[in-house]
Image (cartoon, rainbow over all chains, first blue to last red; front, side, top):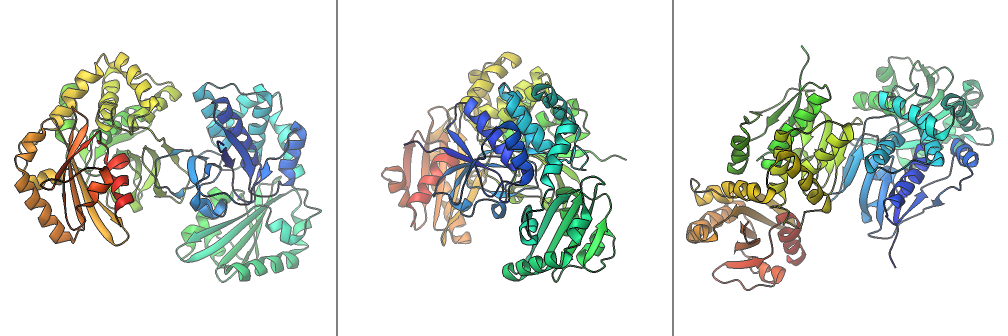
Length: 307
Length: 307
């Protein structure tokens, strides 16, 4: 039996990780390859909105992989963000738009660009391979870009993302701004979630030297509804700090309407955010004006100031 | 003053590292970027033939780089193969075809494919960016592929390399086989070198468990001219074994005309080559039929048989 190559995005998948896995599955199949998109975690509300809108099923959930399984990594490359036993897999390809911390024993296909979204890279791969983009695939890519760039307003946004959005609007027939706003708003519906669940919606683990830290991010149209429960969030965060022996945990609630983020910073290295962002921490929180991107703004500033 | 982005291949540069740096310089300039190709070591005889044939100067030699210098890495990604203080540079792009052992704090452009030569990837980048390939640029790419794939005969060769060679033959007006053979032969001119120098032209150190070994390789069109000096080579090799406490030293003289390699195997683990390649060692030497690639053939077979 020929084993399928598995395609997946990072743990705690966001819309780009899910939709770009589905898009890559389509591209690889069009190129004649035996592949299957899977996912490493629950679908969030925003992605649920996209899949419902397009009448698509979510990819199957993947718990672990067999040794020597062929895989394609989407929207991530670091082992800590991938399936637990990724070290035993054979990575055939990587398509990503993040910083790189990656090694393999053999040459492979690796394609990353410093653009706002994996889908922007995938769009170019369709063009390069001369594969037609269907309405559904264009809608999936448009969703990923709307999500990752917060409607092209995040500082991670590039001219390439903007150019690709125009093309995808034509193919999909969707109005980017209207559809994207509806999608983002659907994603901020966290009314059913506990603070423990909210901090885990999009939470990533990072390392520098012997320091281990997490940055969690949630989009919202209503900061107050989150911070009225600050004590509960702090308890959930402190539990994780203890359990995982973290030096720092930054939880960022990003206001998608006003393009800023209010954070909770906890752990022994919590004061690092004062230097990192030029702010004063008051009651473990601080408002970061014009800060919306974990990748381009929050993470590098912390990395540069963490000793 | 705006600082140029420096483009360079690996240390001990081969033809691909030099010519692909020049090709990338051209592509980036065509795209409006301020760049300059440089090199990390002396030009070998083969590359000298290429540059003379095309009437081009070698890129400037680079010793070290300033902190925060913008760089583009060609034909390599590992720090150990790059300029000494690469950790202080800002890597903007990587174009490569090797295994990956790489990390950066920020997203960047990274493009690698498991093909025979960096030039094959660069060809696709010209196409994708819709930049015309001049006769000279096509000749540089053709040279790189001829060198890295030993005229498409190395097992590292892919269908993509073959396809690209056809296109480049058309643009350059060169006959790949004739030109490539002349170029490879020019590269085998080791008449000025001592045996000590010859074994160090392209010599790599490997480890398995507590075993340390070296595999040196030199291309030749005339095995006899090397093996008439076998005693001198053995002395040079045994000196290195003693000095570096090696368990094994395999020196492979690869016959680029007949696509096989005659080896000298010395050290306590010298007999491993009998099992590794199914040959009998006679007077410390053996002929390995159809073996030309250290990366794909010699190294894996030794690794699999060394206890």
